[in-house]
Image 1 (spheres, helix red, strand yellow):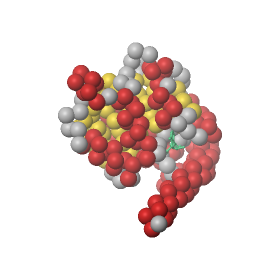
Image 2: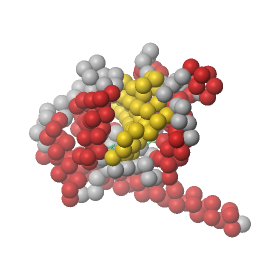
Image 3: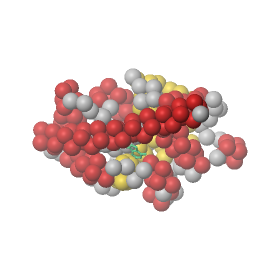
Length: 238
Ligand SMILES: C[S@@+](CC[C@H](N)C(=O)[O-])C[C@H]1O[C@@H](n2cnc3c(N)ncnc32)[C@H](O)[C@@H]1O
């Protein structure tokens, strides 16, 4: 009975945390969007990012901020990915960081569970001067997006995956990407919030498979992970 109670309690805590995150997220997205939209210079990505950073100095914000933002840009510049998947669009801060460095033929698919947030995030990306088909917003859960990803990618595979959505989904989403053979042999994963238990589960999974994954640089609570694919791995583990 004690075990049952503690499991129930843990479940309640997890549900409450998710509900709180959802409502905080909604408040955060409306006020961030309103501020950035009215204060930035439209058409200038740098001004949009500066306005986000200014807002975050005095308000709670879900944006990754300038240090991790620079790191994301550095990775995109170095890897020159052609197909990028971002899980957790929010107001578009990370998306803009990615889009600023994406090669001309590169394309970003960004996923957002909450329809209002997806709308606001997409508007900010457009305000920053980026246009479709450089990017596409998929309004659904990460799991639904991944299960339907092949239809968006065609023959291509992902060269970069940025996870900053629900840490509990990190590992299930990585496994789904693996199963669907959606990651290219040079795919890089960028993981935010690595101190969260869900993210730790993913890190444990990848560090236990050094022949397939290696952990690269990290900045604050963001880490890059390199995927090494082999035909053996494709056949045996996917
Ligand atoms: C921390 S914010 C992302 C912040 C973003 N990287 C930035 O810098 O602006 C997380 C976002 O992921 C979304 N989200 C949470 N769970 C999700 C899921 N399972 N699938 C897709 N999006 C999800 C939330 O609605 C929220 O907008």
